[in-house]
Length: 510
Image 1 (cartoon, rainbow, N blue to C red):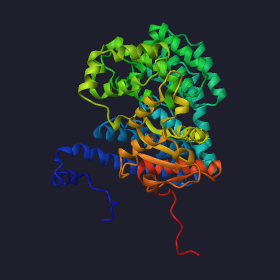
Image 2 (spheres, one colour):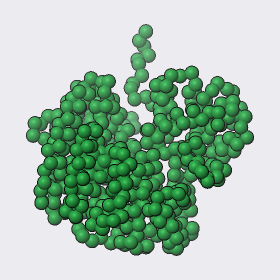
Image 3 (cartoon, rainbow, N blue to C red):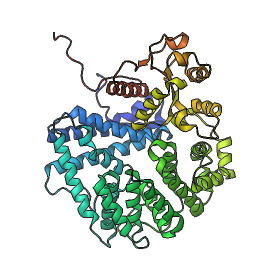
Image 4 (cartoon, rainbow, N blue to C red):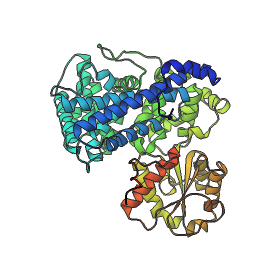
């Protein structure tokens, strides 16, 4: 055995028994599913690359990065649940890449059909379609990207045709509405303008799902704040619109099932939707524009199904984490959600007595510890990390009027996965910086979890404990090279390995 052979499924129960973990056969089977599906995703991506006459390794790297980014936002799940979710994400990625492959080969291939619309409406297929539409830009410098661009243009043409279609049949209607969402979320300025007009022309009482999907596509696609304010106003003042919003999100995250009649009219629980609303709060860099809208959704769930659903211990711990740290100066929905949910006795009991806060419930991926003379470096690094989807706490951006930095810094180190120390002579001479990096080091003194990540932004000698650690040097580099080094270094820190994407050159060549 070389370590790369597949383990036959039939042998897994026996292997589990020999390891003394026979009760975990369910987990082993899901891990096997994940392994098998990853192999299928690689093969399907290689097939698409062949159709486009482009590098399969480059295409696969972009696809796997997108899949990993979706999974990274779900680390609050336990091992079995997380593995099950990974299986779904990889399966959905195969679905999307196969669809792109069909579009490259078959003249009659369609991106949205009555047979696949249910799957398209389920999370995270919409994210993966966005990933596929963005492939030409991600791989713009490589041969074959023009073929991906042609596929993307064909998809957009189909979405335009569907967006103008109107039908009373539920599944066909959702195809049109989802096409509007995708154009609003991933389209260009002209396409977003078209969606905006469709949303304005729609009547809320007659087409609430069209408005819901259109507005959310525009908001997530980067439309101006006025669009978000308009939708927030609708949720507050139009009961049918608010109900449609809640029930669609329930279907999107798996609490409801969409059939040929459309969505059901009643539901008693929204566990998956609640968990994903909390995920939005935990990812402010990606979903900050939804904070007020998601707060209204929390309040609506509270009013629709009552307090007991909020008392799930794991959910309560996460909810308390995001609401405790929410600024008291937020909008009306944020303030009301904070007041009501933090005041629920059963939730307080679940958090206080059952699930203490732990490193697994981290709010931020990175806390940036720096000295004030290095603020430009700190902001540059934070900007590029957030562009990659990481959650970053930065004093210059997150300490607002009325805040207490000592309290925030203490919580930041405790509630961040890792602390990045921007090391310079200024930093080493700062009395306030020392406790920040020392606290992170104390939580992982052997460096096995890489809790402390030193980055030198100026040439200096690292003393003592810092001098024993591997560092990244950004000084003396140009912006493009510095960004490349930063992202590669942070990726290696997260995964504990720095294997290159491309094979190294043959050492025998002169």
